[in-house]
Image (tube, rainbow, N blue to C red; front, side):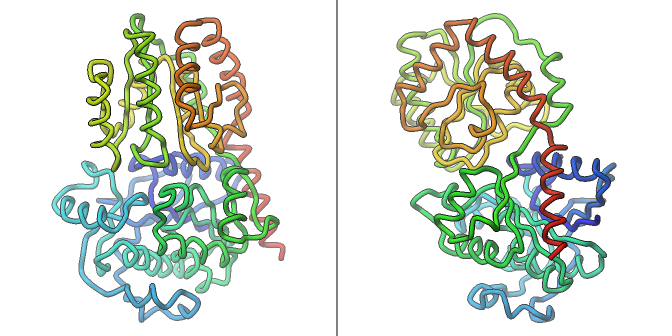
Length: 429
């Protein structure tokens, strides 16, 4: 089977868990004998070789929307905004319009390697929604030059690309939902993004959700029938599983890690409040907040207000070896997410023999049993669990050992098998 896959990030240029998931999914699918064409918004410089798929860049396809036929199914109010302007701009999944303009200004003369974004290039609109439409148009033109059996699109920024490719080719569209606007923004939902998600969920032939938690939210908030949605949990790679035998944690004081975007969705404020309670009992513990996001300034202020600055360190956004190092140094990983469709970081932490505490409001909590689970809002419970793991080596060792065994069953090859079943079902209609 030949698959056209659409995504906004792929290693080594990633900004979150989706890039890791895309790599695992594609490796799993090619391991089953399938072929994949993966279209990104932009690849800076020559397209890097890949041993398991063909990577294409949409940045060299400056085709105006009015020259693309069969767009009548797209929402007209959004199409009207896709004005042609030569522009090199950052397409990034977690930006609102104001942040988009800020990055557009700051990143004009900066390279992809330093920004970590996958910018588009060519005739693109001067706002985020127009940019997504332009990516959709360019990706559809690229798709028209390819032969494939099924289209697999990841999250809201690829919906127009997926729908236009479907209109061009007549091939079925599978929309893979890794996160929803209601998860990212809570009560401050961007209505345009929500409407795009709703449009894509209705247009898709089938929907894949990363958890039952996400499936239930798609049904509840978007009105999609349950039988249209298949749950496929994320996983870890064989390489990540082998790290458990290679990483050695240094002796000394205990260190507790938060790693993720410092945004409402990830619950960084609950982590800090729990940390202040732990430090009243165990003042020697160090807390690390690794990542970046719009809540970071306020989190720094709150750490200062609580007087725990000497025990708290903000690393900023980490990549590759830096992530490996911070996991290796950690005695405990905490993910207090407010609304987490899946959450792949706990699996990565477990692959480094790090015990994990995760919120019950996360998809990954459906998949792993050997983790301590808390309600994100229960600061006292989070603090008590942190203290328990740090003070009781028997508990920590049990979580590590059983987690190691559990990871052996959580493989991308199994996820790929379930995705392939979805492909066969839509193709058999």
